[in-house]
Image (cartoon, rainbow, N blue to C red; front, side, top):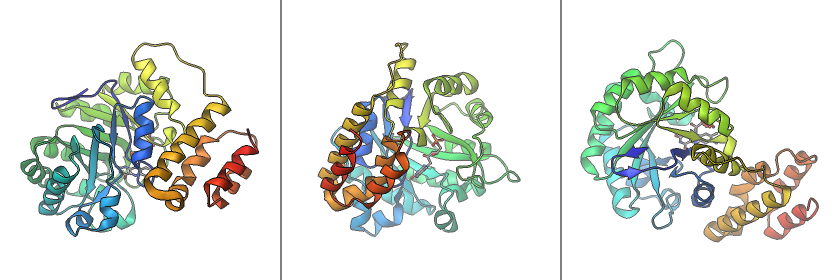
Length: 317
Ligand SMILES: Cc1cc2nc3c(=O)[nH]c(=O)nc-3n(C[C@H](O)[C@H](O)[C@H](O)COP(=O)(O)O)c2cc1C
């Protein structure tokens, strides 16, 4: 896939996930084969008001092929925040969140609420494209709910406004993360726009990724939840897209080794206190499927130092 002059090979994208896809997570995702990674969503107001906590979320490594994702719904604010991020962080692209279903976000007219106002969505993209000289992309959902128009109006507007690629998660806002993603809408978007389309929703294996390409004609697949604590999924999908033979699933020792390295990277960047707290969920997923997974998860949730976590791990090695 190509987004303007950025070549994304293999066409495998790590989904932005608030509280998950920090720098350590993105570096692991890339190492395992995701060719395009996106920051967790960042508040445009937080950028404009220069909140330290907002900028903290934007730590990135030099040359990281990273899109920064912004949420906001006032065109001038999104454009200004994008320009500030472009100058200070120098990402390769800006992605605009038009899909977040969280009440706190949609109440402010942001995220998925933009599905109800395609003209405004277009205006946000138009103003942002005018302010930055990197590609501006959009991530959205199927529709607001089953009774409202689907996202085809929005994708037409944002494409006309200059969006360089569009990601579609095949659920309505109402569905949040439940039910099954409708890949038919991804196919419909692909038939509607000529910019690259990234398909998203429920890809859990290399076979499913292949099926999404075949069923929808999408240009890239984006993987979210199934890769939490399981970066081997990126490896499996990347290998399959490159026509390479599948590898065996990771052993327990390999899972622990990567979990350890991932945690060390988080601690290096955030310190032990925050690093551990913010990685607990992911640590639990690294050990999913173990016979005593629930008990181990509880123990990890109580552990508040690296030493305490090492003690839990020592019981399973
Ligand atoms: C914990 C969590 C946080 C998320 N945060 C974001 C976000 O910040 N921005 C965004 O566009 N989507 C966000 N999403 C949605 C994912 O990017 C993705 O669209 C969704 O999980 C469907 O893909 P999947 O079935 O592969 O998980 C989030 C999802 C989860 C589970």
